[in-house]
Length: 228
Image (cartoon, rainbow, N blue to C red; front, side, top):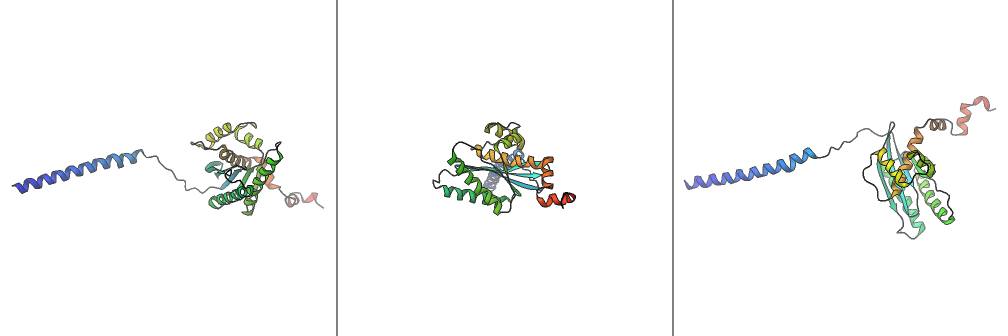
């Protein structure tokens, strides 16, 4: 009799423990699964990828977008801090390595960069020109076509205002590309704006005309009667 009672008690305790496990499983696994955000992975391969660079001697911004049809989406953006390197040539090496890393990682089809503005400080202009030159040379060594855009052109393309400030550019990029988190440095958003500017320029009718006659050979093919 005692053996039967003890056995029933053990079975009751086992069932009680099993019920607790089942209840917690329902709470922490099944319920959580219901509220997890859906992650949608697009299997569509982008038509092309654009790498945009905002050159700098202390911070270099970079941004990548994918283009599918007439739609652009952000891939990555960030900033490379160079200020910890006092040697200017060491900074140039970091620029080269980072651009090369981005090219190897994402395999972009085109490269766009902000051209340096003309300031009063000649030394600053020289240093900025070197930083830009290293980034361009790295892209060209990888076989990428390079396009430069002036700061005013980029601002006008993104915001419609050639005198827009960095905060306005960021707000517009946030709306256009659906970006939630604000980056630590505006250099990153500036570089993303360069890439998006290049995308808009490639979509314009004038860009098609430029592609059709971009060299002397193209001119001869299109105008044989004018060449003797």
